[in-house]
Length: 507
Image 1 (cartoon, rainbow, N blue to C red):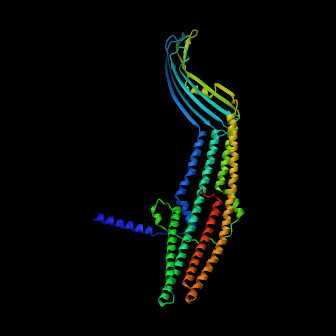
Image 2: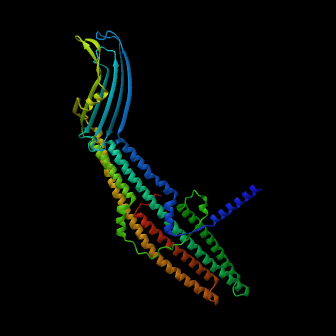
Image 3: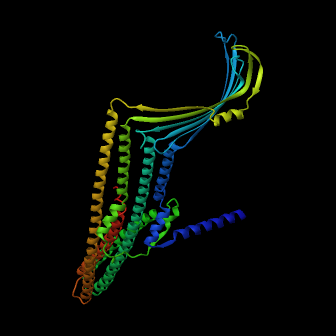
């Protein structure tokens, strides 16, 4: 019983919460809508991951210049057969070798280096050895420096710079997505404002038509008007109701568009939230500065920034292909220090002598002292030159990259031309729609005056229902035209601002 009651309480609570969510209304400004979209829009959340993915590609490319540590431990046990007069019996040798190394390619000038340290412990029953066991150690340093090809650029450095450029391009894509999302939110917001105003206008027209039906009904009842006038008025009411239904449906559709832009739509309850836009359309804004807008577009549009990045990538390709045509001249330097010790074998007599026993032992620390004291150094310095006979491949690659760079530069010029044209077109639309608002407002005022005059004439019997209905239709059309002009003006402003930061969305 208690469980059933608890279940009932939870069900009622959930139902009340659902009803409260369904009845929730957001009074929202256009700035609030933009802020919510930037925080919650799911498409924008996905776009924000692109720069992070590009960061990992930069890190991967930079990995080519990380130092590499290596180490090894090896034991070699060998029993050598008596293959010569010097080795009349089988000889066993046991060697334990350990190595530690570090090598790295530097991100400057193509320089690479390696450092290797090794140590070996050898025991052998060969009578030719001077030590048993033998302790050996060595330190080797090597540097390789390209002098011509690979000095200014190589494949690894080019890949790193390319990945950084790609990271910047990913940033422009994100910025472009933010701009387009902001523009889409503003457009949806002003569309919703216009759609709601259209509903109010349709309701006003319907109310006027219903009032005419009421008046015609009275006049038909007293015999002042023919029944046909009443039928015409009722038909107009039916038509106005149809238009109101269409307008109310349009509001719901546009409201869904705005919800999808400003909410995280994975929560299904957001579709039940009513949006109440409180901002009025901007009508009296000062005309924008066309020249300043063109300058802003040429300097800051995302598509133009990408075109410039493509030129930078093409220049890297040209630089690398030009460098690959040069001979590979490389300076190499190596230094090796060695140390030797162990337990010395004492001999007497001539070669090879007779072993009379072990002598004094040398500690491994002394062997290391020989290494780092450079008691037994070896230096190697050299220059290597490699140059292919015939460079058809390299020359073709260089010519191709030069053409690709020129193509990228021409594409930038074309994109800049389109950007200027698009901004100028958007500015003209603002100017045109501002004038449309003036004429549409004047037409609406005149339509209101005409309807008012026809109503007064109709009341004193000097006009007909047909003329009043015609005046009502003209007023409805004038209001619709004014709302359309206002919306077109607002959308032109949104488009004008967006085109200064990003190109138009691909259709």
